[in-house]
Amino acid sequence: MSVKKTSYVGPFVSMVFLFFVIGFLTTVNSQFQAPLKEAFLKNAGNFRNTFATLITFSWFLAYPIFGPVGSSWVNSKGYKVTLLRGVGMMAAGLTLFFLSSWYTVHFPDSVMNAGKFVIPLGFLIFLVGSFVTGGSATVLQVVINPYLCACSIPGTQSVQRLAIGGTANSVGTTIAPYFVTGVVFSGVAMSDVKISQLTIPFICLAAIMATVLVILSRLALPDIEGTRNDTGKKLEKSIWSFSHLTLGVVAIFFYVGVETCVGANINMYAIDKGIASPALLATLYWGGMLIGRTTGSLLSRISPRTQLTFTTCSAAVLVVAAILLDNPWVLTAVGLFHSIMWGAIFTLSTARLGKYTSAASGVFMIGVLGGAVLPLLQGLLADTLGSWRIAWYLVLAGEILMLLYAQVGSKVRTSSDGL
Image 1 (cartoon, rainbow, N blue to C red):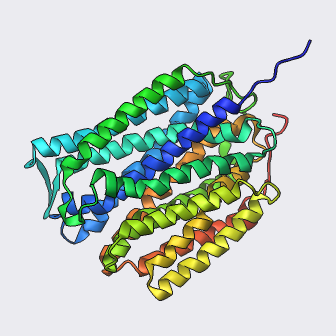
Image 2: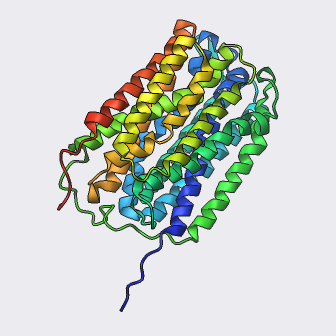
Image 3: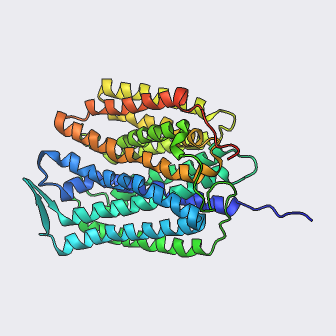
């Protein structure tokens, strides 16, 4: 009697779509830094850049908090329930974005005084929305990353499937800057941005994600054998005993940090340099990510270690050139090489982990905290130094540290095989 093989094609397509949504909303969130700096933070003194980067900080702060939570949900409830919870959180976070606009329109004088700084309470609601939506992206990625790695699709390997998901992610990140400037704010100048323009787009997005939640609840999402500890037994080893995973978390800290520094802060760097169309730079950067990930999905014969080595070296050269020339346009090309770093680092970090894989995916999300810390630190440096130029050395340091992981830190020194 023949055994029917489980088909992962449908779930694979679902994961790719959700990767698109995550990329789109992550970039939409960061692209609000520049317009909301003008709309919300006119009374924030000399630290307007620092306060603006709190939008990205709030989003990525959720990753180390919700990463272990998502991993625990996968182990106890399975992939599908965790996925549905993540989508539900996303709908709630988008609703908070709507409430931020609604509250500010109806209570314009509601502010918080922090010393000499005056911050509208609507801005704080937006930060909470960033945190909740970032938490939903975290939970979803705890499902998506191991699922793309483990689900069997003929003619592909795990790094390819992650690259395909990354390509969809990059489509979302590429169109997001013009969604913010063209759809949300209707192409108006930064000085004319109004908070009321947030209301309709975000209530529509919340309704769309609620609809996606209903559709996904009715789809079959088969479990993946051997990727989670669903017996309730305590794992024999600490997940941190695998050095290639531990150092991979460090590597992903710097990867997400430098990726977000460029993607989120290049607009403010461009404005500082007097460039007329700052959204174009972000679009070119994320467009480079799209091209790189599309190409990366075809690199089935090149090892993740080789891919990571080449891309970190190339990105470092471009960052040095941008600093020396004091030219933000050069930074847009960095996206081409940042594009496949996530998949390479994740693949190297979770190699030969077996039943530790779902736990590893959860702790891996802790490293995404770099997306909160590095852009905030870079904004603080820009305010302190009075210029964005020197602050890009922070990105250069991150590229070098990822290169060291590719060459040394990613080597497997212990394995869960046989446990």
